[in-house]
Image (cartoon, rainbow, N blue to C red; front, side, top):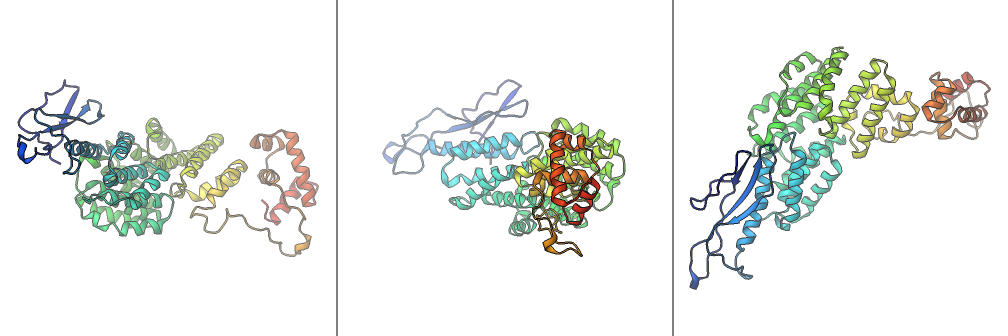
Length: 469
């Protein structure tokens, strides 16, 4: 998109705090044959502020003759200027894909989608879905990508559908639908050879992250080493380009080289700061430097709320595991619960898979976490053995089926039995379940009666024999 204005009627520059960028000029429709006159020109201007934000694009017609719109003629001047204004929004959004600006970009693209004619709406909705997927707003991204796929085709082509397809690939990856992500990536191979740096960089990131998620980090390292230099550099992809470095560090950690990962992240990238700090903290924890990892992670806390949701979930689980290492169990439980609630809200499963073994044990030890998050964890790929899935209680060896208790435990009795098996006292069980000690005693009586025992130790032994704890 050219940014050279016509020689006449140039706009006056604003004070130093702001500046105006002029969009390409658009000639107005000429007068009718019997009313030949000079063409009319207009300016599409946008105010770019010193803090990096911008105002609403404005259209300022230059002095001249402006024909009234013709219902049966070519597109009117006003419709051309309106379309130019909307395209200018997309151009500006593409030049501001940075960590601090993704929320603003989504708002700009959303306004553009609302104002654009139906035939060009995919130019805004496709990139909007892409940005939302990168941020972890998976449900919105899925909905907007569907609108592009089922909506009218852009008469001028454009990259709206490619953006929507990449958004769907990101959604599939974050939900651990790895075959679905692979299928969409394969259909977008031409993007890698295209001229759009945003699409090409996002495609490369997806391929690398998919390789890491599938347990082949070495493939991700080779992929990034072979293709990262070929990705065109542009200001629009500062954040995404720096994410390539972060993902390479992640692959190095997964392949057992945390020291190389820390060296790669020094100095800290300018735009992908939070992502780099979380990955550096993971590298330090991997080599056993828990104190150093917590120090690095604490520096990212301020900006973590604005980071992509998947990164937030990974950071919370990382801190929870380190809190457990330091025997701060309540802090670990709080962070684990927060991470799982956030992941459940978007069906985000990939982010909980890195420390699946630890997470599984942590949830099993806490009856409250088990009750709240068992259903979601049962859908995660890490549950290959069906551990989290409800299963019928089988008769143990040497016990006939008709000898089993006629009534199984209620959900609350099951939680009490789980805590009992962890050697918790009555008071500790009451505190964990937020009930009174009398209520716990009532549940214990019910458990004893149903299992046919008189002592706690016998209840635990019998419960384990029946697969109840």
